[in-house]
Image (cartoon, rainbow, N blue to C red; front, side):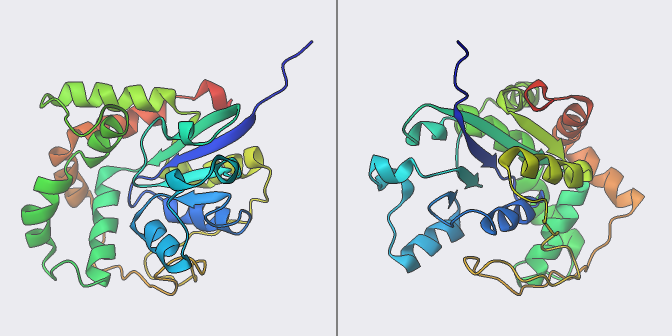
Length: 252
């Protein structure tokens, strides 16, 4: 007798400015928002407040069993335990070249009026102290909590440990193939589109608070700027290279 396959529970660890809005907008076309697809972020909480819905952890077990995907910036490894029943937790994520992520974040924040016109001022006074090696810390904290050791090598090893626990991980330069792969694994059409690409306007789903937002391409990345940002985020550079060099056996 063979064991009956357990129903997957998908958990998307969404690093900001790493293509996650594209995935989540695609998923919302095929899964009921906040019932099958539950968003753990500021706008997810705002949506629940507007709709008069309780937070996921506060719902009865029979409601939590309906979840198919948990996603967002603000969830940790182990969140699958909130969903009752014998489920197979499948953690997935995507990482991005830190220089591309930096420029994308600046253009996004500038378009919203949250960054100055002077990119160098923004970079030196906010991005470098707050966001250097951000992805390493993001993944390390998802598994080990916010109180991380100061040693960058330890932080990198902790981030890699979490990614080793993921069912699938990829990089944004391979995100088209990743979106096709995840769509097939979830049993939905690969009818995705890239949302929030600079200079384009594709309306986001109704649940999103900034449906028609257009991100301006104020700063464009060149080789000199890429090298400068890489020098300030060596851990993120190594993490992305490590992900790019690996294949996730569970996804083969």
